[in-house]
Image 1: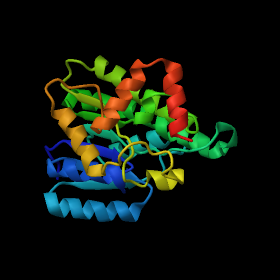
Image 2 (image 1 turned 90 degrees about the vertical axis):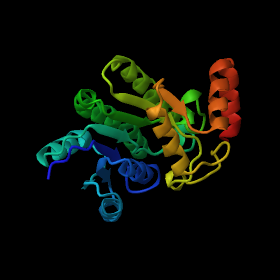
Image 3 (image 1 turned 135 degrees about the vertical axis):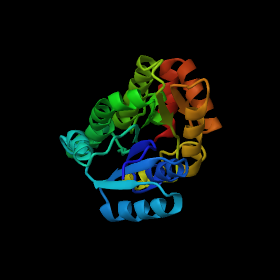
Image 4 (image 1 turned 45 degrees about the vertical axis):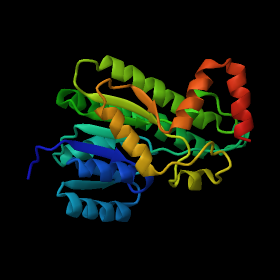
Length: 258
């Protein structure tokens, strides 16, 4: 049956921040479209959220790092008659090490997922989000606020996400849509399993619940910020990185990420 509730699509929804976004938005009455590679985990999460909150939950198994993934996902939701009015671009991963040592195929996949797919999905769903006064959340990182030696390409992708989202939020003024870049620091998710080490984590770890709760508070705020950093220490560190000379921020980041 058609639903009058907002329908939010969440990428990277099978675990970590994505699963937590799904849980907290379902508790607010959002119908959901959950997207990730692991179909079985998506279905388990969908069944639980539908039972707990009485919302409609669709699942789509997809590898969003592949060429044309955003176009195929948009076509799939259209073919199912799903009217997406909210989007959480959470899918992404990082690589650690000197750029000269990175596997080119993994590097291409990371850049495609973190930048190209995020951009294409935003473009595909943004008109309906603006018309409905819905939400757009793009997950950036505290890595966006300074160059990141040993994670050079990852940091650059997140700097893109931050700049891109803030610009879109400015373009959307007056639409009623709520558009936000959220920048977590170290968070207890599977991110560090992908990176292969927690050595580059800076500051105290937050839980996914804390990061998502901070995101939703920002979306609810009257002032409607275009970006927020999750965690007080993280926010302070990011603010300092923006104010000190660039070479000092680079040197400090290089020491922290060794």
